[in-house]
Structures are given as structure tokens and as C-alpha cells.
Image: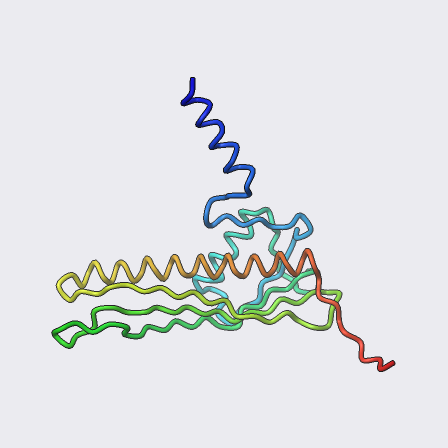
Length: 172
């Protein structure tokens, strides 16, 4: 009986504190439709972003004039640099950086909301297991792309719940 009460208490505490699974987005009910424009419209970032929006019941529009919110993905940059060198003078660790420049504009405001989403990961590299290191790098990039999508969705949600107001230049 004590185990059941303990499990129920733990479940209640984790649900009450706002804890949720990683990768889940909490999209505002005010965001029912969006138009996505991208320099690379068939890229992995845009495809995953569209899947995530559809999973959250957001309708993707084909015409930007009908949309209240326009999300423009300008570019995605990937960088890899050496962060560690072994005793054999070969790279033993790398740092991966994935960046996405994007812009959120609304029908009601003149000023777009520009931002950059950044994700950084480190991984160890051994020349003895090149294939596993390559697979680890690919998995990290996929994880980093999901992290970028979460950052973009949080920013989009913030713009929806607290829309930017165009500042007037009336000196008084």
C-alpha cells in the first residue's frame, strides 16, 4: 500500500510542477495557422519544423497573405571544430554548432521579430571506430536540429502570446 501511495505522490508532484517530456512543444491556442517561408524549403530543419507544427494542430498555409504569422527561415549553418587533440596529434574531440537565422512577422505589426537559434554539442572521436563516431555525429546533428526547432517554436509562441508593438516616434 505504501508503494502505491508513493507512486501516486511522485506522479502528482511531477505533473503539478509543469514537467513535460523533452521535445514536446506547448503551442498557444491563438496559433492556429502559420505560413513558413525558407531559403531551403526542402531542408531537414524546415521539414521537421512543419511536422512539429502539424503535430501541434497548427495549419500550414500556402499563401502568406492569408496568414496572421509568417515564419521565415533564412539559413541554417553547421560548424565543426576540433576541441581536443590526443597524444598521437590527431583530433580526439569535436564541437558541433548548428545555427538557424529566422524571422517571425505578423499581419498586425510592421516590425519583424528576428532571432538566431543556436545549439552546441561536444563529442569524442576515436580513429579506431570511425563508423560509430560518424553515426554519433549524425545523431547529434539530428538532436541539435530538434533543439533548434524547440527554440523557434518557443519564440513563435512568445510572439503569439505577447505580440510586438510597433514603436511610434512621437517626441513629446
